[in-house]
Amino acid sequence: MTTNPLDETKIQYALHCELMRRGQYCVIPNVSWSWLYWEADLISITKSFYMYEYEIKISHQDFKADFRKRKHYSLRRDYSSVNWKEIRIPNYFSYVAPLEAVPICIPDYAGLILVDIDKSYAHKLNFVEVQKPKRIHGQKQTEKGIIAMLRTLMFKYWGLASERAF
Image (cartoon, rainbow, N blue to C red):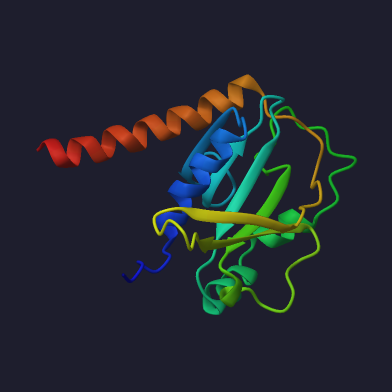
């Protein structure tokens, strides 16, 4: 029996299940520019209101393209003296990728979670954190900010539902 190759959607869904199992407060896919300063594959919020971003990569080319993005300037910045009411940058940032896609090095602030297909059950994915992310800033998300993120998700859902309805 052959297994399906890993793709972003499969990884995204399996990571969502894993994060919820670990007790994350909410896990939101494809968070857009309306909340973050860039688009994110997956965001999770902890019960203590810290935000984690997970960037899913499938190939070396995916990593190369991502390293050229503007967001990495924001993720490298020192936020120790910044005191914003709402910060639209994650507290932690991690890459999620199969081993064969990972380049030799990743940014020092980024975590790395390896993903592979479970050999005993082909529809299950395994996640192993091999590098913990460094904290980018310590400011928690506000309830108002989380509600804004969830409203964005709601509009996206209903936009997709309306496309199917008509």
